[in-house]
Structures are given as structure tokens and as C-alpha cells.
Amino acid sequence: MAALINVPAKAKRGDIIEIRTLTSHIMETGFRHTMDGALVPRDIITSFTCRYNGAEIFRADLFPAVAANPYLSFFTVAKESGKLEFEWIGDNGYSSAASASITVE
Amino acid sequence: MQTTRRKFLSFAGGVTVAGTIPIVTLRPVEATPAMLNTAIRNVVGEAPIRVGKIKLDIPPLVENGNTVPMTVNVASPMTADDYVKSIHVFNEKNPQPNIGNFYLNPSSGRAQISTRIRLADTQKVVAIARLSDDSFWQVTAEIVVTLAACTEEVN
Amino acid sequence: MILWRAIVLAALVATAPALLAGEIPPDARRSGYFFMGPDTRAMQDDDTSNPGMLFVLDGEALWAKKAGSADKACADCHGDARSSMKGVAARYPAYDKALARPVTLDQRINLCRANHQQAAPLPYESHDILALSAFVAHQSRGVAIAAGDDPQAKPFVEQGRNLFMQREGQLNLACTNCHDDNFEKRLAGSPITQGQPTGYPLYRLEWQTLGSLERRLRSCMTGVRARAYDYGAPELVALELYLMARARGMPMETPAVRP
Image (tube, rainbow over all chains, first blue to last red):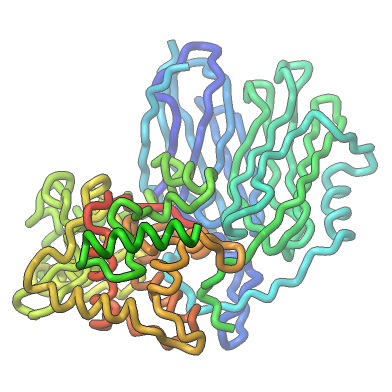
């Protein structure tokens, strides 16, 4: 599954940077029915975590009210060069991950 | 801040089924104001909720309730002594009152999050911020959701 | 306003006899982008905010992936799509000599799969066909639409135009009644657009996924309470071809975002 991560490749130490993530997921609410009346079971991403060189800097709990292909934007202070890791966890054992690197001067 | 941004792509091992489900009918049960209050009290407990500090940026008239962009911003210095711990967003009339919980810390730098949400009907959206002193601050917005003229739903 | 329009149209009829009354003059044509709000525009404008780009990325992976009993990938014949596919989607639907009829980009991809990859066709509106066509069409972003120029395609453009002008369904409406005569007005809460197919396959907020022009046409038909043509039906292909010819010269936007 594809993910789009938007992180500045370079930042000055102390800069507040925006991180934007977009990932493929249907976010099936569990409240819809098929034409013959059967409930379409819930299938959503329930949790998102971002770690910066191993330390958690942002976390979110998501509910069925989050739109398909979840988009999240948040901020962090650029402290040091390294790696940002992103993890999405959801129903039915769903798990996906992505990462991006940043150079801090 | 450097403006050079990098698009980073990854193909992680996901299990999403991408197929489309045949026409589905959407007859949602609605969350009640009581459910909304309960959901809020589950987060806030008995603490008082004040108005202010928090801003909810959401179009008052949305183009499609299935994907509504939303930004929450809290006025906070985001220092080790004074920061926003979390932001909680709720709705009044979706089948479920919760939208999302977002956990921040002093290293967030700015207490602001954006996402895209679903709103089943014209309704109230409530955002609540919990600060590091465990005070709670709330903002409410009324959003008008119009229905598209030519939708695929046949029933 | 009505008077102003009448004067403009009268002038056009005098100077451009090919233009039927009610048709939109070339310089008055507007993409659906023009009719949508700033939030939805912002979603399209930034590739890392545009959910359609997730499909483009998946399509890029599929482009390089071997398929079928020939064990060939699209890239094995077509190489780097960035150059080989630039401008291609802007010419689709295109006339296919062997079939003696126009084919859509989706149908072309499936013809390639059948003839060159010996692979099963990808079902209409399946994730993979949308991803591949989004990836291919994305290479034409900014390229002027040039479909329908082939003289052999002309009868099919004409067929599409007739379908566009023909009233249908329980509401007895033709495409032209909304999209030529009443754009910029509103239907329920939504603005009526000109129906310019500049950004397909596109991400529709209503669908919460990418979809083809055929899917959009079928929703319109359901909207006027007509029976929608099946995916791939010659009528739908002709309509698609007419719409692309009608948008001739407008830049491609794939993957567009629409409400």
C-alpha cells in the first residue's frame, strides 16, 4: 500500500517543521449495509504513531469518522538529523509502515 | 525553515482490500447529544471545560460530507512547563461521537493538527484540548453538510 | 445576465457556424477545478495532499511489475513512462484500427494485457486498472487534450455528441441541459459544472476513492433516472470521446480531486 510522506529534507536546528502523511486505506465504517442488507464489517486504521530517532513525537487514535485514505498533519521541532518513522495499525491485523530522513543543520 | 520538501514513497506491507463493495445504502443511526456528552466526559472526567485557547478551522459549508478537511490549533507556548498534551475531536450526529484523539508533547513545537473527517449530516463538531496543567479548553463549530445532487446511491 | 448571454451566443452563431446553440465557446470552457472551493482545490494542488497520488504510486509499481504468461511488464515494452506515456492519455479514447472503433485508456491497457502480456483483463473500476490508468494519465498532466482529431474517430465523436444532446430517463434531461445550458447554477447544494473531463481518473470526495469518467457518466445517468450503460459499452466510449473532443486544448489534471 502506498503512503505519501511530506517532510522537509533539510531543516535548521530548532525549526518547527510540518509533517504530512497520507496513506491508502478504505476506512470502512462498520455502519454501512450492502443492497441485500448485510452489514459491511468495520475495517479502519485505529492508531497512528510517528517516532523521531526512536522517540514518539506524535500519536493519534482514529475512529470511523476519519475519511478514507487518512491524512494527518502535525508539527515537531527539528532537533537532530535522523529518521522519522511512521506506523499505521488497524482492524484485522492491519499494519503498515514508512520512514523518511531529515538533515538538521 | 527550508522549503525543500521531499516526496517520500513507500510500499509497506498492508492488507487493505481495494475492491469496491457493490452499492451500499447509508442509513446511519445517529449519535445523541447524550452520547456526545458521555464521549466527552470519558476524556475529560469531571474537570470543568473552558471556552477559549483552541481554534477549529473547518469549512462552514462543506462540499462533500465524506471528506471534510479540518485543522485544530491551540494557543500554547509548547514549552516543557506549558504545553498541549492532547486534542480530542467529537461530532454530534455521526453514528459514533468520536472522531480522533491526537497526542502531542513539548517537542511538537506547535499545537496544531489537520486531518479529513466524515460528517453524515449538518451538525456540531467539538474540539477539546487538554493542557499540561490538566485544564480543558473547548471550541464548537456548526457545519452545514449538503448532499450531492447526483449521487450513486440508488435507494 | 440572460440578455448578455443571448448577445454573446448570437455573435458566436454568426462567427462560428460549427457551434450549436447552447454549446460552450472555447474560451468560456472551465475545468471542474474552477467550480470547487478552496479546500478541495488545495487538496488537488499539493501532490502530498492529493489522495489520487496514492493510486499513481501504486500504478507506478504495477507499470514495472511483470504480469501474465508472457512474463512482461508494461515497462518492458514502453520503457520509462515519463517520456513514453507523456501526452498519450490526452489523445484517448483513440481509434483502434484492428477493432475499427475507439477504445478508452482502460480498454487499451487491457488490450495490452491480452495481446502482449497474455494476462487476464483487469475489471472496470478495480484498484489496479485505476492505478495504472492514473499513472499513465498523470504523465500527461498539463498536456493539452487532443482526443478526437483522428478522422476515423469522427463518426464516433458525432455519436457521442448525439448522446450528449439526447434527453433520457424519467427526468427527461440531456447532458447538455445541465452542462452546456446551466453550468454555474446549482443543483441541490452542488454547483453544476461544464462536465469537462480534464482530470480522470480522479479522486472524488463523495466516492472516497479514484474513479473513471465512465463511473461519473453512469452516476449522471442514474441521477436523471435513466438506465446507465454498462462499463465499456460503445455508447459510453462515444460519450467519453465526445467529452474529450469537447475539451480539446484544455490541460490534463490527472489525478484531479472533485467534491
